[in-house]
Image (cartoon, rainbow, N blue to C red):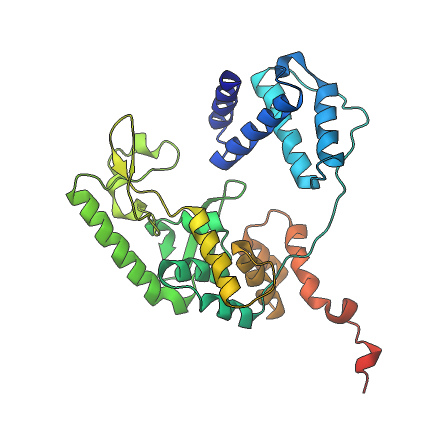
Length: 318
């Protein structure tokens, strides 16, 4: 199984799939093999894939997107690793499609949550709400991605490997400048100690050998401790891990006594909803969020359907 997993990872990396997609696809292939009692995928075909996907829908009650992700992983495995195109799946049981409205906080609830956060946690949450960033997009911000003069953020390699621009809230620039000052001090100390390198995207490390120590490539939110490469002995800093912010957000929602199931992504939902309520164009919001399809952004129009498609209840009639 380990050899197959390595081959799958190599095939994904050679096609520039994201690290998270690689991890997800490897997990689905592993679950597929375990489901069929450790049989090698080369010995199986459409019938076994069908049985696994049907099991996910019928027994595990997974969502449509989860089942589709599992199917995509297996299609990639057979097509690009095993060199075999899967054909007709027969009577495949598809997971039931559902259209769930996003959890959205009111402006007052957002302020209450932010009041429970401090330091870089407050700043990260403010960026997710004020700029509509996903959690990973916020954590992976580099100094060069910030344009304080134009009050813009460039999101590099976002979901779907797309770049986009979004606004930078003017109200948080003093705190952001303070964060950059602290980060620069940490970077200078690391350089003085012989380290100060950061991981670069793609082949930039080979193209620009000294770029990894440059200030503009450093993370806006670096980890407190340096990581160490066990093979080379080199040390550097990664960005803050996602679980740190997720845990802080969960605790803040609890302390703010908000009963909604709010997460970091709820701040992005609230960003889009509040802009729509303020009268901004849906296409503009689509661009700020980085949605490929306008249908994805249209889910936020639920805010216009107050009281059942905008109809006033007869109980409220004068």
